[in-house]
Length: 476
Image (cartoon, rainbow, N blue to C red; front, side):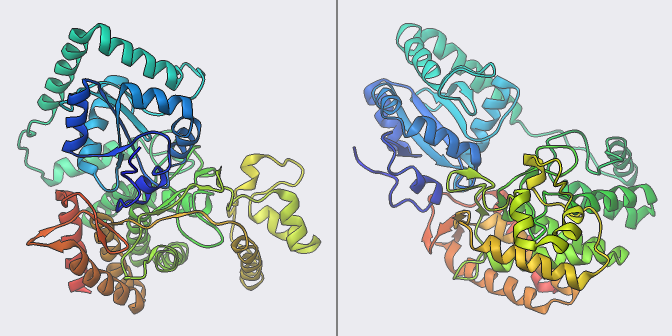
């Protein structure tokens, strides 16, 4: 087999370069090959820090028998959603239309013309929890392609027509203060008044919703809008979704209380949250928001900044194949490391009950602020030093224009609001590096890796977020 992914400008694609699956990158050649062989396309989309992408890769794409079946009956294409969000968006819409849900890894089966006719997300190696095995799915799709081609073509046509209809322009509608206030009221009705956030588990940090409510409060004086934001920011900051030792937020919480995170740390999320906490600190004087903004900004510069001054996309959810391995703390390890008196004082602050050890207890929270801040800073430093000696999660070093635009804007605004001029300097350096790396022949590239250009042109989101970041930097 020809290894087509080894030199890709994508960490995710390189992760799959040694699979026995004969992967193709997205492009006309792959679809031409499918037409030549008269077989369907298996499209697999994910990203480098995705836990379930790793799981499916280990279970299925590294299995020689499954790989042989795929290579015989399909043209397999691997896509990094960070590199090609345009491809991801189209087929995620199809997946959601067919299944009612979406997520990564995304698994789509296409005609050689690129039309989807069957889709899903993660498929296990054996049937479980109502899901068929991946081998069963592959076999059924291959058999249907051979024996019932007319039904496949009809299904692909229906799905493609529906997608095109849904992508029609939205009707124009003016936005006035009354509509904005109705939107605020609708959001407040969905607020979790115990835990903050909106709706049920799983919970993602509602950065842009909270930003909207902050602006509504500034415009109208709405105390309810401000209260909802304050509650949400405090609960997230004290939960396990926030790294209580080194700063930075995980992607989302699997529960409603922000306790147990899905452990990858994304640049997009942390940039938006840095901006939000800084705005809240500026508006309210909250010491908690000021601290969280400071630690989040420092996290960006310490953990995600590349040698060229840009920012990498994410830190992996897994370490050595185990989700959250770097971040979990068994009770016995905490007790041994801290010693009797310090452990007895620190464990209740971290929400750890030594008499009821469980997996949730291995994720540190901050139930309340310590009475002795200096002592607690020493405890955190000791724990972080020990954690730094563990195996560390991998870095998805792909540089995405959209995400870097968000980071530049957040660092510029937060740097001014919190008196951190070094953040503004870092934002300036990132902007210069992006102009050098991503401005090519009068256009913009979506991504790069170690200075090598990616395959995709910038999307509207890329240029909009980068332009907004540059404007914030200019104002700073």
